[in-house]
Image (tube, rainbow, N blue to C red; front, side, top):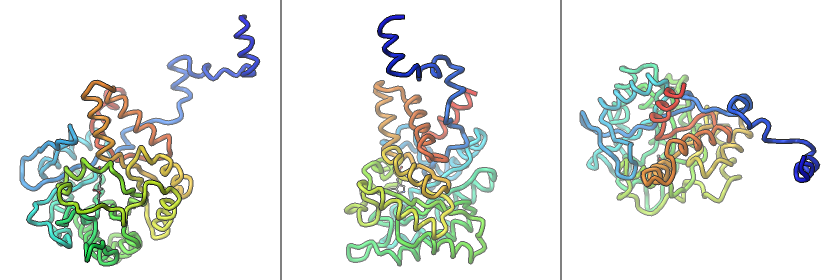
Length: 338
Ligand code: PBG
């Protein structure tokens, strides 16, 4: 035994962390977390028309789909075992107005897609985002009056929109607008309209983030948005405030909690899981996806391995699942590996 070995045994007290890492079988045996297809929620972008598969510049590999194509995508996702989809509409500019009134059309794009997907692929969970930003001419999540996003009037509108989404067959409503009081008000409205079984996934902690850029191109709000969303989304500097906001949503009846964006906010995921014990999901948002794609396309990182590592990191941070644009590719990779 060399002097160094003797010295190492002395400083470590014969504890060698590498013993458990030495072979594939030991690594598998001691592995604490795993990513499976059951952890994935796949976001889909919708456009009007038929037969449309429209690429999004800033999100290579992601497409805006017409409803018929979204149904095909849903079939593929269900066959791979992906539990749920989340839909986001890019509606005609002519339908967008100051108050986002088209959100209250029972036959709008999001509701039409829910009906078509639920009919063709009933076994897949449908999570619908409720917020006014795809429907407003200014790209804000709420109603804009005299330069202010008015809270209570917005809650009234998104509550009606949520009931229409549930009528169309949504299984989980995901309010992503950050207005105060919306979880409790939507819960009551769903119950009053016979939708006791429809769940609420609250975007409880949604941060005023620069990572949403590519998404705004995808739903066509990028050029429209005036100002920023700092008056209603949470300051990225604030973790304790995020927990307080989530606590209110839990009290108001949220069934599940969402942290958004994901990777820069793993501390929030962990704190939420510890604090509430409710299912916690992370939304790996457009900018997170795009960074991995861009570096992968340059050959600077291994896209698939980096993507899988980020998703595993969410599991380690306590998340029950992840909403990710990688969902389909990852589901395929997991199926290949098994
Ligand atoms: C707004 C909304 C946003 C995203 C989904 N819904 C944020 C925004 O545009 O401000 C972002 C999702 C992503 O970046 O992938 N209700």
